[in-house]
Length: 194
Image (cartoon, rainbow, N blue to C red; front, side, top):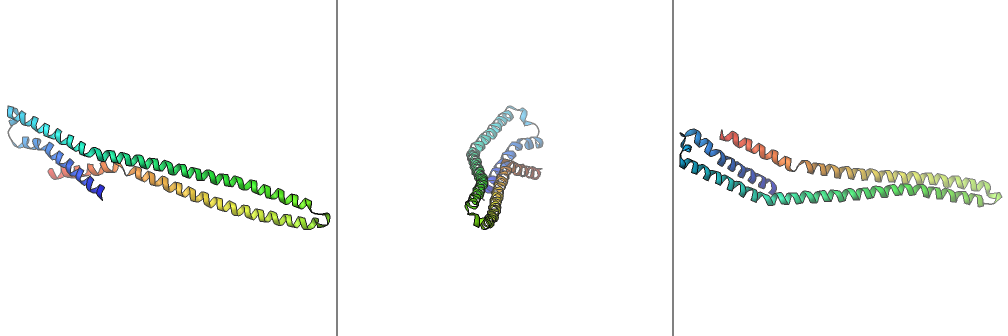
């Protein structure tokens, strides 16, 4: 709300500058050419000095807001970079977890084989059944871990996409939007003057 009021104030000030700059032209069209006299040239120089002074004043007033806007944009870019780095770190961690699952599965399978070989000859059939049970449990655990990892990766991708979309939206709503609003206001003022 504060920014909108500031934008309207700037646009109003710009409109006043435009009217002040156009006043000598309008006055010149309605009067017979007093500009050719020495007094007319003095007034032209005074008018020029007033317009330049108003422009300098306007730029000095607007400079802090431009500076604060620049700092805000730089801060948001840094924040986006930090968020991207955090997301990439989470992605690497998720990939490492997926790679570790294979090693754990391999270790579990090797342990099941050693346990089955250590069984006595008379318990050979029982060991085979237990090995199959362990393998099914390992497959179920693999499937569960894989589902959990995929869900985590999807959530990470969704967060990254949301962050990227937010950054793009902020990027699109900055100076271009302000300049288009200002241009529309100036065009409306020109229509009212004519």
